[in-house]
Length: 275
Image 1: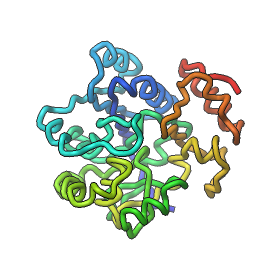
Image 2: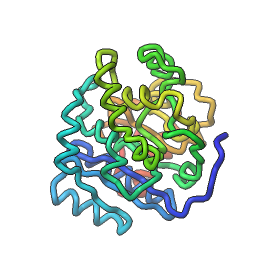
Image 3: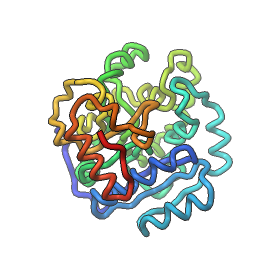
Image 4: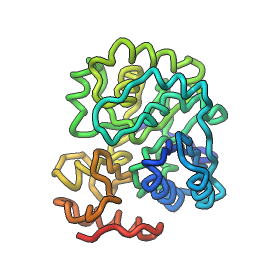
């Protein structure tokens, strides 16, 4: 198990565009409900002013950061690959250390995650010499490693524990761009591939409970090494999302976990389809 230290506040970041606003609201609300002393940093990559006001109205612990024009220009160096539902907003993760210049350590969450356990437990983890903490998904842990020629296992970028201070000190954006320019012909999953490539041999295993894919627990029966009752963050990655009509009717496994997620969503004001 990774070593831990007691934090003073839990900093969380989420990147939001107009396509991800529905999921983002629920990710934020679930994080606030599940965790104490939390500060949410919303990185705005194209939401409307009305949507920004709606997000601010959720909690006084939410701040919204714009992406300056020079950073948007830098992001134009990258092209999308893989699933059509993914937007270019994903690459904004590569500049979190610049956009959130006053934050040294944070948990990044994709806007299709649902927080079930206290994020403070994850935030306490000590990086050691690593730049980043993450965990694997069953579908890519080996395939991604082989495709990119990694030394470590391949990780999913939907939940990240980031040492932004180290990122800034090493001007890591230069390494991100250099790796992309050299390896983009092998890429399949956008920013996730760049992060795996650059932080190979410098990423910490945070524990599977902090990023459990819907496919691993609802559509397939995967061996995850944890009890489903211990899931800390549920990740609805892929083209199918829980806010799509009649989502619950597609569930094949772990109905108890689904009902737990459904109850949590109801608590934060979102009614999910029933099984």
